[in-house]
Image (cartoon, rainbow, N blue to C red):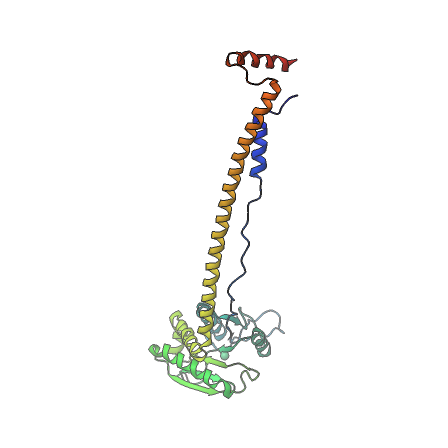
Length: 306
Ligand SMILES: [Zn+2]
């Protein structure tokens, strides 16, 4: 009978043992609740460009020279959205490009977003008198008055250093009549006033407008900051739990590796002993005297060849 050679048996044992699956740590259940974000809708007023299709409507808003209101309002909306993103607010825009959107469709988008506050961004115009100037906030119904006042106060603060006159708030029921959340239409300056038109072309002035509106929103509803803190805490808890899980998995993997190598070494020892016993039994004799071993091995080698 031919016995399998020791190295072959050992190699097979090593392959078998090293292919054992690694123990995995079971994923723990989340121990925190991620709050839903505060939602605010922003409407960049006007939008769209003339096309070859005469039936396609478009609305640039106020146009002075080559400056169009629709471009300023979209840029203001992007700046305000960036500021609100830092407050962890989810911002929904009624348009994100140069697009014509009906007022009713804009309101549908606001309503569908679940927004808790809504601002429509415009710039003002007074044809025939370029001296007319100042910032005004319109609101549709009395239930939006305090929101409009908060936006007005925020803007008055950030536009003070640009000497923009504070024209206060005014009711304008024809705007956003269907609104059922605090709503304000922001008119931060006049494109028909040369000084304010110059400021409206500047990035720092546009940032000041966005910051003023943000300050007004934060003052109007403390929930914005509360939800932000809840989100930050939930994210910290999620990160901590993730770290803990990563640590547990690494520990389990280390334990599994140590166990596997222990088994491999143990198996090698057992196989070695088994092979020794098998070799001795095949020889058919107990311990041969030391001086005859060399001869015995030579004889066995000869018999294998036959
Ligand atoms: Zn407008």
